[in-house]
Length: 250
Image (cartoon, rainbow, N blue to C red; front, side):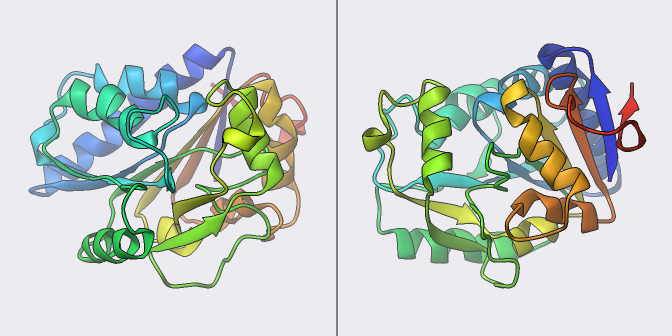
């Protein structure tokens, strides 16, 4: 894994977006289409803002898959990841081929139908984040590293739900759904390339555990270190607990 550290959250998002745009353009130069996975949440705001403004990407040839979504949450709720992607990605790019996880429908059926579409061809590029508890997508610790299912129905732990409150998506932990649909760890790792965007001081402990601790289901995003083509973008705050040997400052 290549680790890049930028001076600020905005610069982290900008640098990651430039790198992602080049990767996407490279795929499109060698193929008729590109298939990507898009993450959501506060950590991805700057990245998506910069990426969707990048020139020279033929979004009409891009197919997007949704990483995770709450079960039972209306698309009109401010915390809805479908709402997030429609406003911050689909609406900005005009992308026509996208697969959103409808958490208001039967979750087993959503897992089956979107999972079938996801499995139908390889994923070229995945954009992900890391949670304060080290989660990858909504795979909280201890994460399932072994299942071959593309999507799972998962229970969200207290740390994960507390993070959503602290970021302002919900007024109280009781308002955060207890269950979600999440892409599985193994499915994420099947992507040809993975780019993780992880800014903020609140992520520093998780970043240290995932980058310098044991690769373990108790630190789910640590599994990214086993991927042959993964890059992580941090700011100085999220990288503050790392040793110098881990960091490459750009």
